[in-house]
Amino acid sequence: MKAAQKLIQELNNREQELATDIARFAQILEVFPCERDVGQLDGARRAATTSRRKLSFFLKDNMPALDVPQSAEPSVRRQGQVIKKAFNVAQKRVRHCTQFEALMSEQVHAAPQDLIYKAASQTGGVEVMDHVVTMFLDAMHTIANPTAYTQSKSANEQGFHRDIPLPMNQFTKMIAAAYRLCLAQRKRRPLRFLDVGSGGGTKVLAATTCFPICDGLEYEENAIKAGAAMLKLLAPDACKLYHADALTFSDYHQYDVIYFYRPIAGLKNMKVLEDRVFSQARPGTVLIVAGELLSADLEAKGIQKLVNTVYVTGMSKSEAATLHELAKHMGTTVPGYGRRVQSDLGYWQPLLDASALNGFHI
Image (cartoon, rainbow, N blue to C red; front, side, top):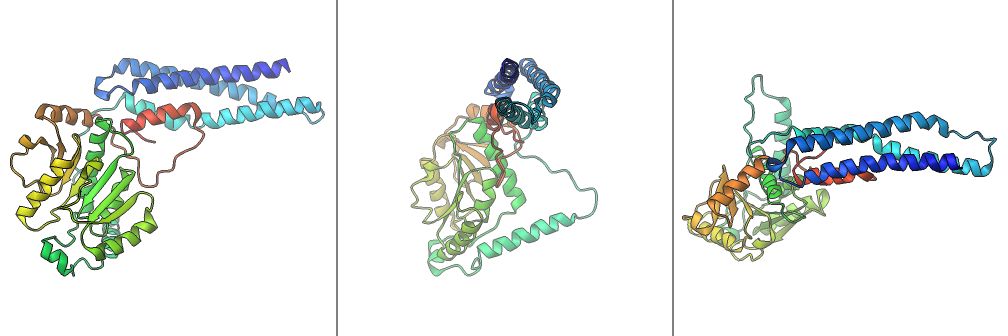
């Protein structure tokens, strides 16, 4: 009995040592990447790796000794089962080590990346996968917007554009940049995204790769009906479409990222919409504006251009420049649509949480 208790105590000590080292590494990750002591971070990584190896060797050396013969006393067999269960749980956690140690190493050696990356030029022929992806995206847009070319009389009278689909490869680059800008501000969770003039909501659905709550604002009732039916099937907990007029909508302040692509045809009303968004949006809101903003005197309104057509509200030029630099050091992986969350990670969980705050995921 004493030997069994000693074995359990030794296992607990080994796991606690590893948990302490992982927590120390995770704590260092709370500092922005460009402000960290890389030597200190690497030292914490090495300590965690050493502790993990000690635990792995301990489990490997002692697992064979846990097999209790059937001839042993019932109390001895029960004790053996308890110990074996504890070792099995510990071994299961250790199995995660490869991917998590890679996650630690990636952050020690991370280099800044542009917010909008430039795709490498193709050297070969046209990729079949590109055509397949384009075909499916076009099909989804048609399903979500079956009446896109027959806009209602009311929408025409209001001066709203029919649905104009921005190419998805452009959109994904911009929401990835917006996500990293949110991380660089340590924004409150969950992050919220809004598409103004969402049509049937295909961009709303795409945004769930980066943001857990994604809404669309659309005036055309037929588009709302078709899009809502699609989103109910594909992402009912993450996406909603609202039938509303963008010029009278009063909840822009609820969102961390706001996207629009010329939802209104008239220049005058488009500027009215922009000013309404500017006046309501909280400082630090990221604006994705395909086609550039039209309003003049953006700096006087606290609107700063960061990269391409990605802007931020309520900041001075120097504050925006600092934010841009911080965001370049955020990781380039995103949570991902439908990402499975592993359970019972134990002492690895603090590492996963801290890494996610900086845009690094497994």
